[in-house]
Image (cartoon, rainbow, N blue to C red; front, side, top):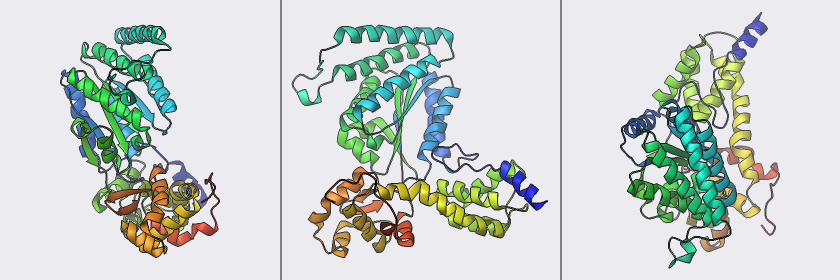
Length: 404
């Protein structure tokens, strides 16, 4: 009988741990969602706006928020396209083009869809005529000149936005992991956003990335800070975490005992991914309703294993020998961030000798620089994972370059 109850409970598990999976309750992100809702209203009234940038550590729900915003745009019957940057310029450019084509084909309004498809066909015919030629809008600055591909992208967005504006609509391009994007392509997108704004055309980039994304945008184009509104996504408060856990289970008729709920709030540490991981494992372990401390305790190892696999192990494997030593030193120092000098001293090296390792970790998205001369992990509790598991002894290497 208890086994049947457990099976029934698991079948109705409302928690959804995993990358980008939409939770029942997107807690603590009302301000960001309201910002997108205002943009939608403005777009339908032919009023332009700035783009949006969401930045934060891994596990705070950036991808989920971005996808929820995309849903809002599509529900409002505006044009929305989505890509996740890979760092490969050609692949990302093709992803942008493909996502635009897909958004156009999926447009519900038959008349608008026909007009947009005709626009794409017209631009494609122009591209054929220009094949083999390199266009430059800034001939005196050849290194920053537009390639035919970049010119075609800008022309595509401009012409589509002209069609959309005539019908009180707009085009939203959602870009996840923007900090990974090739610098020149990132600059191209920022420039297009700028030029569309100058022409009063409804094109908006809504992007998400790691904490250093705002700085990367400003380095790419100095005026980027004026093109976007920036939102830093942090941890949920204890009350927000508690409400998320309660509202997630109430629709399936389940609840937590007060002590179980308190413990889950503590374990989650305010990180949405942790909420889903511990909530999921606890729910699967439950043999009664309300769900008690016994389920929390039984589910802890499963949740921790999920976090280790989903957040930590694969990232650790990507680091070189020296880079792993660097992360181990950061973990030993503890705290939310540490100075590069302290890391080097702990390793018995000069700071300049560790520059390459630090830069490789930044490029891999494993650490970032929250301030001059300081470093921090991009993944919550990465230091705890390193101290707890001593991964150097058990983790294999994943394409680590030779010589390190």
